[in-house]
Image (tube, rainbow, N blue to C red):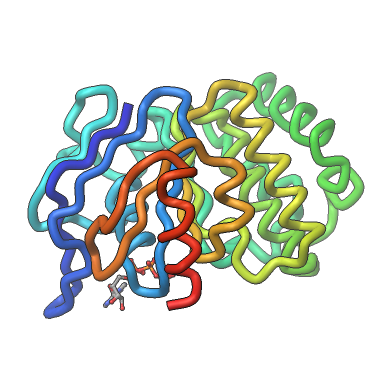
Amino acid sequence: MLEIRDLEVRYGGITALRGLSLEVRQGETVLLVGANGAGKSSTINAVIGLVRPVRGAIRLDGRDLAAIPCERRARLGIGYAPEGRRVFPSMTVRENVLSGAFGLGARRQRQALEWLVSVFPFLGERASQPAGQLSGGQQQLVAIARAMCAQPRLLLLDEPFLGLAPIWVRQISEAIREMQRRGTTILMTEQMARPALRLASRGYVMRGGEVRRAGTVAEIRDSALAEEYL
Ligand SMILES: Nc1ncnc2c1ncn2[C@@H]1O[C@H](COP(=O)(O)OP(=O)(O)OP(=O)(O)O)[C@@H](O)[C@H]1O
């Protein structure tokens, strides 16, 4: 479904990705694991269209995304939850979640919200509260619910577990399982590999903007865990 070939991303003089290639097949959950600065966010940001690669290709269902701007990629069915709990702080929880389904139409928005509240009751209990007043874990869940709201075919999650208490790691794992049950294809990044390894079927271990190892979760587990301590 997603194919990345020979991708190079630079920020001025810094090369963040050096010829990265990977693929995510329909219905899979694939993990990118690596230490700080390995290039995980740069990979996700190139797929969503936030950074423009200097070389290489990104294809969704065989279609080259190079000429497609960020906002049109969302319409192709790509959903994205950024690193670092980026909610709209003064908007309510409900408004934050619905902002992910902008343009879907009132009836589908209502259905999506009902579904998300049934999966995560806290979203209903806090619906009218400004999202900026929530705890870090709650904000991260709102950011993921916002990405889920449009029911994307391909969901990109950038470090969804970063800095969270175990209770939120469990809830976010449950959100990811819910999307898996719906057949969503998922590409997620993590430094903290353990909970993510339980959710993924395959993975890539990244370092210095390159893939160092690729394989099933069982195959990459040791190097992924080693990467956590580098
Ligand atoms: N906006 C930017 N300007 C300059 N350099 C950047 C920028 N964003 C990332 N980099 C650099 O690119 C490299 C890859 O960073 P990237 O954020 O993709 O890694 P990461 O694996 O996601 O790490 P982290 O877990 O810290 O987010 C690093 O050397 C980083 O310092």
